[in-house]
Length: 202
Image (cartoon, rainbow, N blue to C red; front, side):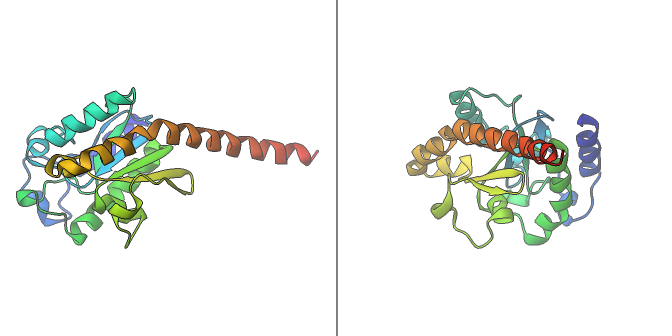
C-alpha cells in the first residue's frame, strides 16, 4: 500500500499536466499514515509547503495539529493532502483546470488508503463531493458516499483570518471521533451482511 502511494507521489513530483509546475519549488503530494482511517483534503500548498514539500506545515497546519491533538490524534494517525499538489502563485485559489489536472492523483490516493472518513478542508475540496453547496450551510455535517463518509469543514486558515470562525472549526473537528466510530460500526455491519446472506444459501 505504501509503495502505491510512493508511486503516486513520484509521478506528482514529476508532473507537468498544468502550468503550476513551472512555478513550484517542489510538488506536495501528501503525507501521513498509509493505513489512515481519516484523510484530510485541503485546497493547495502555500509558501511553506512549497519549500518543504509537505502539506499543512504553515500557520494553518499548526492549528490543524493542535485540533488533532485535542481529539487524541496526531499527523501520524491521518493522511493529509490537497486537491492541487503544486502551489498556486500568490496563494490564489486553484483554477478548475488545475484541480482537474490533479484529480486522478487524488483518486489514486483515496483508492490506496481507503479511509473510512474524508474531511474536506475548504470549499474547493468540498466541491468534489458537494457541488453547488455552501460551506456555511453544510459544514460539520457528515454524508456517506459509498464506502466513505465525507465531512465538509472550513479550512483552518479561514479560522485564522476570521476569528469568529475558530470556535466553529474546533467544534466541527471535535465531532470527528464520534463520526469515525459510527463509520467503523457501519463498515463492520456491511462486512457481516454478506456472511449472513451466504449462510442463508445453505
